Image (tube, rainbow, N blue to C red):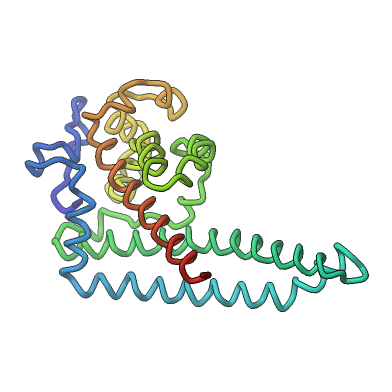
Length: 250
């Protein structure tokens, strides 16, 4: 979706880089087009599968290592006599610890594969300029204070409600999600943060002030439309995974 996006960053009236007129269709369809694009290009599959296999293997190793090294010490700390309930609590703690560690690993893996896919796509379309563009650093995804992170944390429980909750969560965070997924392109062309905010919000607003501005949640905001569909797809995938896990348990 990035291949033909070349905004004029010197112009005061910089056009929206994902405006409907750019492609002649609604940005809400971009995630669907992206899926079709990846499925039609096996070279992109290999990037996803390679990172997913490495991430899955490391996650399993983390779980095994925690059970091998942390289970008994935590049970002894809870109860020196190693009562049965101490083992149960220790198992729950190890699972929680492994979930946190795996979550961090997931952030790294997702960031890495997204960056690799972005650069590979731009190169396939002949739009990547080696001497002018730069790939986004994985470290940037650990900047927890950017793009309304607090709002995402506060609204996180909403997405636990299947479908409806995911839709509401995606709608609240839509514009910031859309910005997140265009961030790699903005960084590649070295678009300053101020111009990024102008592009996304229509004015140079801080993230905090944008949270309380109606234009951030306007259905005609291309970034909101794009971000809603991306977020909703993610929530649906998460709910599907939970259902499979529950079915596997029973």
